[in-house]
Figure 1 (tube, one colour):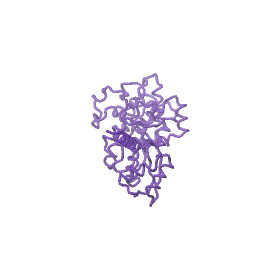
Figure 2 (cartoon, rainbow, N blue to C red):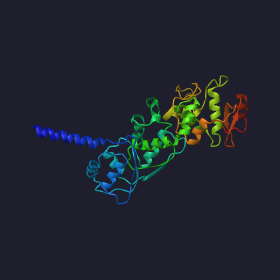
Figure 3 (spheres, helix red, strand yellow):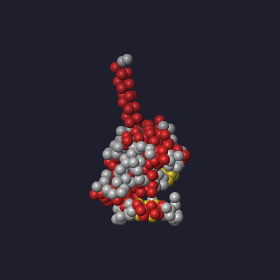
Figure 4 (cartoon, rainbow, N blue to C red):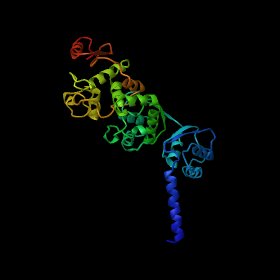
Length: 332
């Protein structure tokens, strides 16, 4: 092979590397708005202006190779940091936000995957894989023990209404959820977390327990029970005894009804077996439950039970709780 041929091959490989990597100028990503009639030159310039690419010229080459031919859908597109030129073309190659999905408060990562697959956004298996393996550049995730989590980012995927694309990259879908969480965690909230004596992960864990237990009106009282039990040295012995956590730990082994075998299942999510909080959040809490975890009611409650009136009744002693459970008011 001649020196000229080697040089040409090296130049080609270098060009392909640049095109594939994209080398974004903004690792945190950003948003670009395409107007009706915008061609590839305008789109590339807008991406450059937003700091999402470095070379409009190289981007136009990739866009041409991808068959864009200067035709772009109008709308606002969120571009995750580190996206390659090819990935940006894929994101912007579909109408902006053509699939609208609502995740309710208390939803879990596995359930999110099911909803996204049914909506045609991405496969559940790929969503869960990205949850565990993708590296996300968020300050609040640096201390998250992702490798030890069921579902990877449970608790940090903010329940809300989102717009996705058909066949969207699961990591991009996660980016939308995490961006929203980051936006909701205001400076005021983060200051409360810092002064609470608990880590963000612990506050989200408490909030997730509240979310799975609340009847919708009693978040602050449930929060008070959780904190009272965590600090209690009496009859509750720091044990929260919340079945929703055990159910989470059982995962796909849960059949819909807790059995005696389930109650004795050895998992750190079994809060009748282990003291304190479970190792991770058990769901994705909404803002109201996060606020309740940070501002619990000041009570002497240690117990609660659901009545036939569909609300929780709270008690200071086990005797009071047991009396209610044995009464005709108890929902069973």
